[in-house]
Amino acid sequence: MLDEFKALEARDPRRMQRVTQVISHLLRNQFLHVEDRGSSSLLDTLLKSDIERLVSDYFDVAGYRLVVRESEGWAGILPDTEQISHPRMRIDETLVLLLLRRLWEEGVQEGDVERYGSVLVTLNAAYDAYQDMVARARRPTLSIGEFKVLVTTLERRAIVRMGELDDELEDIPLTIRALVATVAGDEFLTHLEQLLARPDFQDSDLEPSEDADADVEEGA
Image: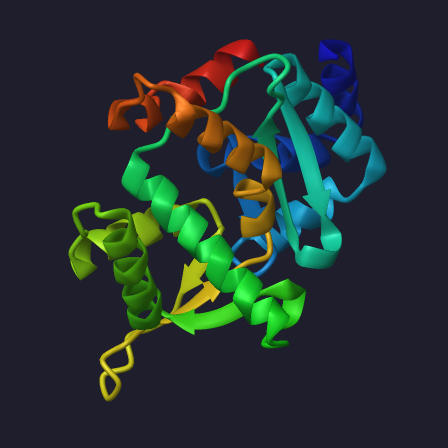
């Protein structure tokens, strides 16, 4: 694989630079979406079959599989659970992710689908739905500020996108992207159910690993 990268750099240095940018972006953020600033050209690079194969091989060595969904406007890396375990997440982050998947599914069922399969809601509406969910689960409720911080974390991973504050409505548009159905997919739900079913389950079992990016880089 190293020889292929060297050959590409010798043949087309500018193209190799684009490949490096794609890999670096995915290492930092896990996903990219065509509607985010600077990501359209990265996805264009990745859609070239020889480049996609190189990038896929790179992450395969580290135990991740490359997923490209051109129709939904995104690409990203997911753990190959036969080689490595799921990244650990805080329970609050997990609940917010599951909530966003539910809101996305409701929007799709109602036909409120935008370009690339996205669903538009608002931050306040999502927070209201979150409050209902945690009340049923009898868990402490995050403040709207804490909830927004978690949503911002997911925005950095391209799973959602927040718009500008509407001063009149005192609300923020929140676009939930189709990739939430993959991130919080059936495999993720099965893993979560197995954790919750354990008699010794603690919230810390879902806490994120600070070394997640380092693991990818070291394995690659």
